[in-house]
Amino acid sequence: MRTDPRSTSDARLSVLLVEDNPGDAELVRLALAAAPSPTFEVVEVRRLSEAMAALDAAPFDAVVLDLSLPDSRGLPTFTVLHARRHALPVVVLTGLADEGAALGAVRLGAQDYLVKGEYDDRVLVRALRYAVERGKIIAQLERVLANLRAFDSMPTICAWCRRIRDTQDSWLSVEEYLSHRANAIPTHGICPNCRTRIENSGAG
Image 1 (cartoon, helix red, strand yellow):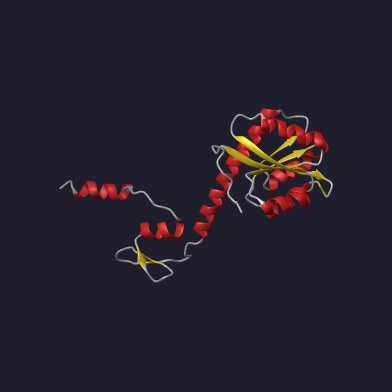
Image 2 (image 1 turned 30 degrees about the vertical axis):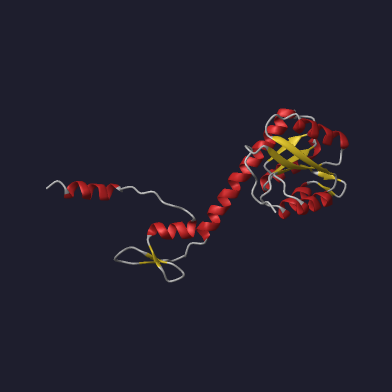
């Protein structure tokens, strides 16, 4: 299953449209079909249960989600789906009466919401493109945080050579340790104190 959204530079984005109103669904399909880049491949379902089955069956880059469905209404519509696919970007569709629930969905992780009848084709396409990009950034940040949590809480540092002992009892340079534990390759520079020492050492 795909957990990380792809870049919008890809030629095609796969979107799951969860909307039970045929007229509203048609507006979304037409708007995405008219987009010049990227192109959108839309899979349409009408119930939350159908959406969950679709997510289990195929990967998607984003979801357009109506909060009022035959088998789910309001904020729980989003929270149930979000719990199943935490990293998947979601753009919520809502009516004026449910705008409060849509704001709640954004607070809980939805990338954006649009009020039915108050958005045009360009707004919808832009919202989806931005949602996918923000989802990609969030996924990257979550990976960095996971790597940081993998650091030893109190690593042992050699008092002489400054190497660090890892959990396998190997002594690594700082660069090796960071590369292994945080998937990061540090750059090098000279701190102000060392620069002063170097300059002073050459003065005489």
